[in-house]
Length: 395
Image (cartoon, rainbow, N blue to C red; front, side, top):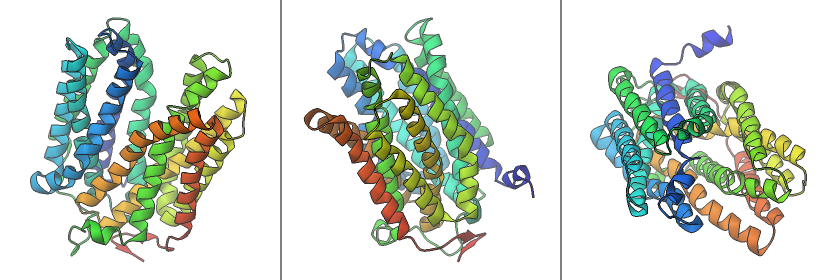
């Protein structure tokens, strides 16, 4: 059977969620490069800009615990749409902000909307995708985010030539379009991933399941490495090597293209080979790449290792989510929200701790912190049971 025929069996709703996620990430990519410059026009200094950037993740983290309850009470589709609309309002208001304080308020609103969308979308995905397709479904979903993230920054730079507020307005329009698409096309009656006879699993039970703990640990490690090491530390290192800052963008673009090329095959590996091999391979490859960053001192090796990390990250975009789907049996609840929180915790705490380690110890030690986390996730993945889901059941 061909790959295209195999992938076509995925429920249509998975592709809709991927398109919606792509719109969200495209818009986010539009505004992120412009945000520091835009904030500076209101008199914000480096520290104030840092607070503005971090506030988004902090509000996501603070709101995450409530997402599971909201989804159960009102339905994931409604919460998803509300999240999109909150983000749209936030972005539009930022375009017309009159002070730095208003930027803080409107950015906070965007963080709340962002987590309402992301947690609800993941919960819907796990409910819709059959057990033997969760890896591929997660990969297709992440592919939308990845494509939007690759295209967004370049388009944002072009839009900023019109006016610094233009990317924020375009982001708002994209989010409104995504909300309309969700209301018009997305249906939640199909719940092939929700196993019959299984109720929502409570957190005390989830934390006794090794699969859940390992998936959450992998998500925490990913958040730490992506936002603490990759986004916060790598640009500093490249500039310290006396390279132009534009080379940072090229390194990130090349690694993103590698991940984009591998994300769909990675989803098939998760479903065919099983969660455990995919988790072992993903964490092992990522750990090897970040460990290599501790000792290299050239830009060429940096690009090679970031690309290697992207290969491992492709597996880690699909395997942990599939594991979570297996544990919660496709049911919504706090389990999905806590899993999402783990990435946000890494994104919030990682940059701060990595910066402190770099200042008080060394750059190599800072990279080593990410390597230690990923090695820990690799060892934890080795302890997973040898289970591969079949359609509608686990064996």
